[in-house]
Length: 610
Ligand code: F6R
Image (cartoon, rainbow, N blue to C red; front, side):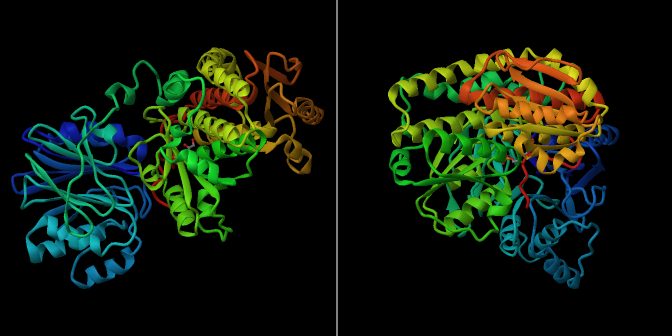
């Protein structure tokens, strides 16, 4: 959730660190800081608030140096104040930046206080810097001291360490939080996310769990958790710098909403060139695994959980395989009944969401044999932990509110439905062709839906003055209502809830009056007539309806009923189409309210802590 960037170079590294922080800011934006080594002294600057505040201070102080580490924070332990901002230092000579949570920090704090270390923050991170300092005093070897220190940590960490005595050396380590090395020409970098380094290098070395590395100007060495030298491959990042930049858009969320036709086309590119789907799109062993399973459990958090919930309707209804969808933070601590023939599917944009990764580990430990992850980040923890995988090709998602990741997850899940449906004899060749044709048409259908933006803006103008909103849907559009409500609440701060429309009269109808806008997803599917009855119940209580229908849904605008019709009914893919106007509604409502669309309060991208 926080971001780390570090550099050792012959040039001034401050602009590199600052640019890296700006690119990582979406991951955490409570406070930011950096420390650079100049000669044998460390200079530290920290600021609560955004990276821009830190930048202003750097300009004022003319900070520079050839070695440095920097951090953007999302507060867990301790308020977002300057004293809690990273880097943390020990005895003015050693500095650390940290992502993750140290679970045994209280016990370590007591021990280190007993040794005379003075704590100046409320963070768990401060124990790391003092611990490394303590070992460094005995060994005068930064790599060795860091290895001894991390061996005493319980929890998750990615850390960067520098020391005033070693002006050309950067040490880093990871366990449970991502960290990578960027390889330049006579300069090296570290970062928690490759997007931070795109302006300086595309050569990336991913550290593995338990690795500790020492990075110099000319080379680096990596030691694995057993103390052995490790050879990790240099990979060329496929990410292009412009993919992570705003271009002509006002916000990343807006850019990412409008990128969906491209993101879907790229996600489907590898599979749509053929007349028939090969199970291998999920991995070499996929056919064997998918034939062996008798049920599917999908585990995810937040928006990705909504994708799981849509897939449940598809998997049972189309592929005829029992399916459950579980919230990862519940599943990992629930006494569930493992079935070794269940396929565990995890879904995640980042692949680093702590609860989802832990839920997968829990499923495997409790006897599940088969796992598949659907993920947007190739080298993420989740992908590495899974036997089978499908990579969505949405490109970097920077806006905190997930948009293109969600629709590409749905496309990937639909491919799983088709493959399982075929293997189980539920989909014949003609039906498969029909579904593949529909998928081919999907990007252009989304482009058509994006043209509805001016109509959505009119809805947003009305929505922006409301305190609450209800979202209704039925069948696979119920999770889309959940997604619409989540988008609205997280970026516009309007309280929004979603219900299956049939549940209305079991309680939520009591909330409906003329102050309650009710957004209804009304595609022309088998449940349309039932949904229309539910909408009558809302109108009868004076509720104002905002109905998203299809061309042939036979719903008419009237007083208290605002209507937007999608260009065509997309059949089974309709949930993907109906998502897009809801994303635009949340976006434009937030714009009207003047909230920080890409960095909503209290949130951060990639929830790498519990
Ligand atoms: C909401 C949102 C979050 C994420 C959730 C899971 O817009 O973005 O709810 O969907 O934190 O994240 P991933 O998909 O990275 O596991």
